[in-house]
Length: 261
Image 1 (cartoon, rainbow, N blue to C red):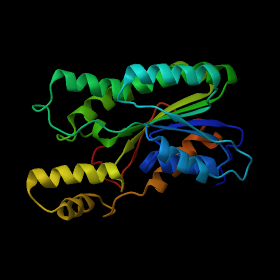
Image 2 (spheres, helix red, strand yellow; image 1 turned 45 degrees about the vertical axis):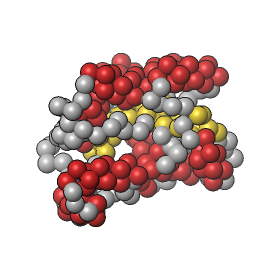
Image 3 (cartoon, rainbow, N blue to C red; image 1 turned 90 degrees about the vertical axis):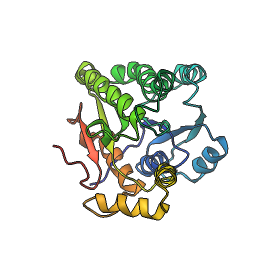
Image 4 (cartoon, rainbow, N blue to C red; image 1 turned 120 degrees about the vertical axis):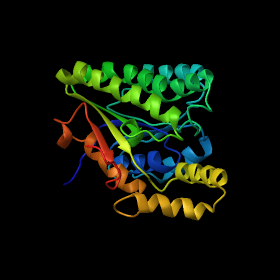
């Protein structure tokens, strides 16, 4: 299947590394004009120079800090006052790990701003053009933990669950305009985020980090972690015309890890 996104403008969050970077590369390879969005300007500039431009695309960067919602809201509002986006990938860094007993109400507020408010605001600003154009794609990077919560990721579990139910409601409202809204439930992928979580888990359990990774790999039916490029392929498909009748879904990409249907 050849996916052609020529002429489409994409905005990808968290695109300075890992899954977000792979998504940006895949969308650019399919012809989209990509705006990379993250807080590390140096990394963004390096990546944007390497993106595929064989189909005459123009790529750029948007420097934001998702963890500072007030500042983020000003920057993203200014961006959308000057730019029209057809494909929005809501992706941010994850909140700190920890269980329910460890976290206080302020921790939940910070996570809510990071995972929920940033995505809702970006989507709300993108939707007007999508509806006027009678075409659009909103793709939320979520987690398998919204279906099977991970006790050590209580902030992520809780707030991402809110995001996916909000996205379901939004998908109904904009479906008539051929705007699709889908959530990807992320499993274990070989990224810096996983390395950070494994390091903290190893420290807490007083075992080598290699043991933590091995246990994680063994828990996946495919016996390995996912590759960011595999994730990007799914996003690219959902962004394409070929996925025009898929909306309001939660799609796991986890090597078979989820036990529930």
